[in-house]
Amino acid sequence: MHVSNEFLASFAPHPNPLPKGERGLVCDVLEALLNVFSTQEHFMSDPAMIHPSADVQSPHIGARTRVWQYVVILEGARIGEDVNICSHCFIENDVEVGSRSTIKSGVQLWDGIRIEDDVFIGPNATFTNDPFPRSRVRPAAFLQTRVCKGASIGANATILPGITIGESAMVGAGAVVTKSVPPFAIVVGSPARIVGYVDASSS
Image (cartoon, rainbow, N blue to C red; front, side):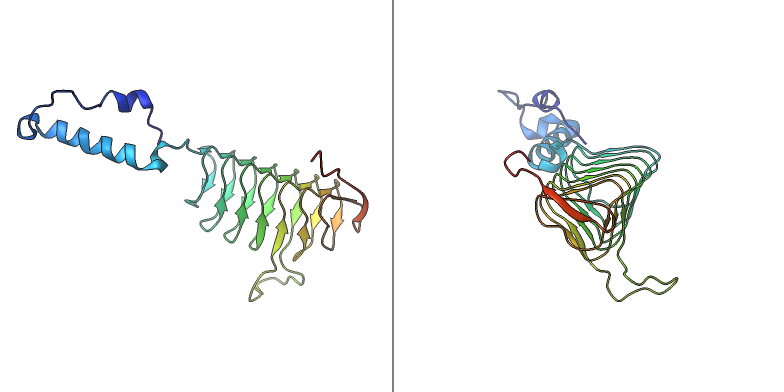
């Protein structure tokens, strides 16, 4: 809910208020509402935008985040502020997405995925969380995969479980990442290999 400053100002105390017993129930209720809105900061923040076709079960969606058509976000997921989650994405329970990140269409984030702030994930990039998957066999714990602050993952890249994509690293489109990527490294190919480094001063 967003309450404008103009709305709150309209309920500012009168310089010569009536005694409490003469104001009536309506005035008392309005004063109580004013106290609630002016003291609870979360009522004043900009709300997330959730498209009507999205199925968002998590209560942990940050301010100004945009969730587009046919996105599914399960109850345990935690999404930061100013995130853009494009259509046809799926986010499982044990997932964290940092603020100002972009998740393009067709991305699935499974249990154990950690996306830090300012990350870009291109369309149809694929994450995995089980190195030896079998139908109806669930491991005791899924491997954690981390994409660090400012990193970018190109379209259709595949990220194997349990690795870390370092800060500001870049993964080329279609790359198959089988081991951790150092900070600022640029990796391409299958299996992905380092072909250069991003200039840290300009990233």
